[in-house]
Amino acid sequence: MARGADSEAARIDTGTRANTGAETAHMPVAARFAYGFGAVSTAVKNAAFGYLLLYYNQVVGIPATIVSSAIAATLVIDALVDPFIGRWSDMTRSRIGRRHPFILGAAIPTAIFFVLLWFPPAGLTDVQTGIWIFVVASLTRVAVSAYDIPSTAMVPELTRDYAERTKLFSLRFWFGYVGTFAFVAFSLSVFFVKTPQYPVGQLNPDGYVKFAFAGGFAMMFAILACGLGTLDQIKRMRQADAPPPMRLGFGGHLREVLTAFRHRSFLAIFAFGVLKFTAIGMAGAMAIYFNTYIYDLSAKQIAVLAFEAVTAATLAAPLAPLFSRALGKRTTAMLMAMLGILLNALPLGLVYFGLFFPTGHPLIVPTLLVLGTIGGGFIAISLINTSSMLADVVEDYAVKSGKHLSGVFFSASSFMQQCSAALGVFVSGLVLAWADFPEKADPTAVTRAMERSLLVHYVPTILALWLFGCLFLFFYDIDQTRHRANVGKLRALEAEENARQLQDAGVTPSSL
Image (cartoon, rainbow, N blue to C red; front, side):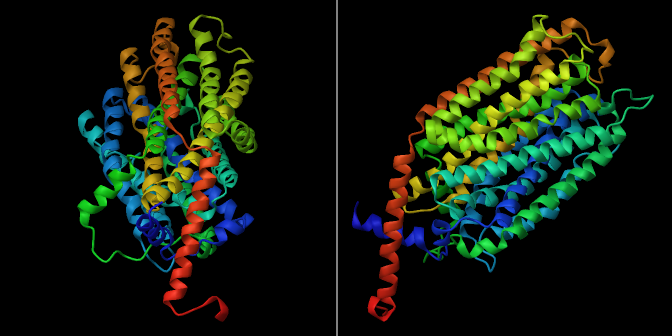
């Protein structure tokens, strides 16, 4: 390696840091718990956005194409804002580090914007309502990104261990899945109660008032718990580098972001992530339709099905590191994704061919719960491993470029997850439109032809999203051997830079 490149890498990668503890000690249990619990915020947002289409389409009565298009358009805002949140986070220097000002500052705005999203002003036309959804959903997503990007960017700074990162992401995903279950199950059991006027509880508009405020509070509490619970880890995390002698300006920052986004393995993860989270968002948005109109389930029965998030996450958390070590992260991510989606789509395929239990059969809910647990567990293992793969990209890019842009790379992770609430809902709206599914549909008036039309458009679409997403992972080329080599190179550069700084300060080894 050239001396000039070594010096540049050492200068930028070491900077002003306090990360040696990240290599030599495990995080305290309380800090791990707080970090993992922060995922509840994003989980609540994703779960709630899955109900957004149903609410505006079937409760308010806005055409599905307008609702889904408005939500999908917010991705433009994410594409512009997320990389710069990551870059800003990488460069921030403060008394509480570079990540925590964003995490703590995002808590209250996230809650406010989320609540407003469910209260459109009265008297709006369909198009005006779509504009309202776009504006407020965009603000909500930017606020969530301001928390999510810096918090996930902390992982490469908290530990460099190949397997330890997978464990940390396992914990975060477990809390995310449990948060989804707790919020959805509680809402369906307590808020969405059936009345004589609304015999289907999840179509009761009064429930969405409590749903909105409960979600906003849960998101704010989770973000504050993550930020405050990890404050004592700042001293062992990499801090922002000293400011460069010349300001880069907007163009300079944009060039650095675009350069990072050309990394081959990162692009493989990014393409897979966009497609997989679109599929996940689509599944979340359409699940409430299937449960309500195809399986004819009550709100309490749907609440029972929400428990599969807990069982799936509990299954995935300990297994993800094991599969990672045995098969490698890439193979695990691809194999588990395909197994998971095939199991999840199986009941719908059986319904289409008339081979599933008839409506009202007592085995419908247990069967869906078991298949959802196993399939969801496989998908969770895939998600955990791809998140850990992204953390490994950070060091690979640092070795090649001399720049440790964790925030920039994990802004892509945030963008990918936002796709679940944008492209996923958008594709769901298209499926509903293609199937000619009506607004404010009476569950008792849904015909067999409507069901089959919905399924024949949904199942092939979601299978194609997962399949093409997995194919992109063939371009990911960082294995455990290469990761360890990257970490070794960075440690050597840091040791060299530390020695040079001591020498410049007139400190010799004998004087220590």
